[in-house]
Image 1 (cartoon, rainbow, N blue to C red):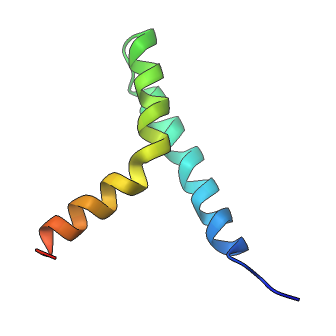
Image 2 (image 1 turned 90 degrees about the horizontal axis):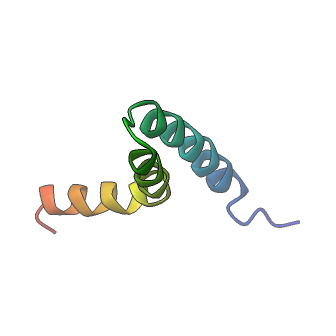
Length: 57
């Protein structure tokens, strides 16, 4: 029996829901809410990008 990243998927799912709630709560318009949904989807990529840029890798 293999466990191919099931824990990582669960952690990403919970983090996605948390980011979605955060961004939607701070939206001031309908389009701000749509942008919040898009931000919630791509926030891990932005986090890794800024982390690598900070570390100069």
